[in-house]
Image (cartoon, rainbow, N blue to C red; front, side):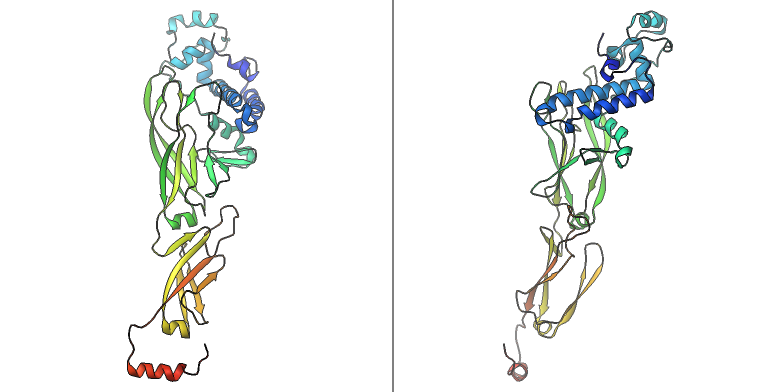
Length: 352
């Protein structure tokens, strides 16, 4: 008889679309993995996937028709009787009901939806998120449904793991380096990446699919930040697909160096400028022209701090680190006798 999707969702066989959505929402709130303690998470993940699959099948008219006529095995394999035998097969199947008498599309191929995609679609608009976003325990899932957690290298994003306990083994995560310029990490950006991966259908056949992933880099993210797309790696029979992880790396910048949330720039000035002053013009990472007057005498090794002109602080929107300017005073390689005499005259009475 196979899986009874109606029983999984606790609805009757004439359930409307609204009935299915209400049932799914009620059960998803109970069994979503993030709403369960670690010890119960493997069971919750299994239940959550069952609920999601049941909703996927029953909320799709074509999938539901085939399931009602021929059951789960026929739905997933795409093998169901020809039109001449459809009435006989259907009337003996426990999931048959009267308004599904016509024969389904014979070119149908079962393509299950991702559980997180369904969750995002149902809850996304209610949680204030955008398409492809949902909330869970106050944490947002966006662009691949990655979730935040605190880490030493800044905000990290990680997908759920299969955890201990019975069930299929999960393939080891696949990590890829995502090289970003300092300017990109300063301003934030979105990057679309096409991936090609192998998946197994219900009959165990392996096929290649292409998919576009959207990676959103938030302003101020640091080297080592991870963005995880759960189960977007290659799939093997009997194995849960690997998580696909992108690890942020930082390209060197020609002028700036990053030190935590601060930006550091080395500035060379002449001895004359160090003694008499000058006006510095610094181009910021977002293209602004920062004018910094030097009015005090600059000694070798002096460091000037310009508040709130460093990197954005990702955990504190609106705040930035500092810009630190380290000065190197360039001395003349030689002086004429006349120049030395002039310096003695000018500086002879200056107290140090």
